[in-house]
Image (cartoon, rainbow, N blue to C red):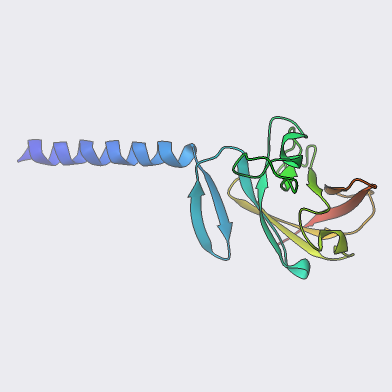
Length: 159
């Protein structure tokens, strides 16, 4: 009987380790209290801006050009995606620059002072308020268009 209990215990440990390995190699995206797992290491989270009704994946590639003309499925796309600087780290405010094309998201150019930006990144929710001045900003959003580039600055706030 002890051998059966030991075998069940070993089987439980193996299943637990395999589950942890799976979770480690997948990125969790949380939005509106629903959780799903995405098997793509370029998807690092999600971004939500209620004032312009934006809810989108947040990606991070190996450079800052790839997702200007590719979607999250890595297919060519004129619209591109919303992505974090390839050296960026939002937790430590290191190269905290988010890029997107102006035609990627209708209304993203309409972000205004004090708009709230919620980013789910590496299993944490980070909140920002747009302040439109670079001084004391933790986040920069570069909206790229053919005519010009618009920069929006935001400061980290308590969620």
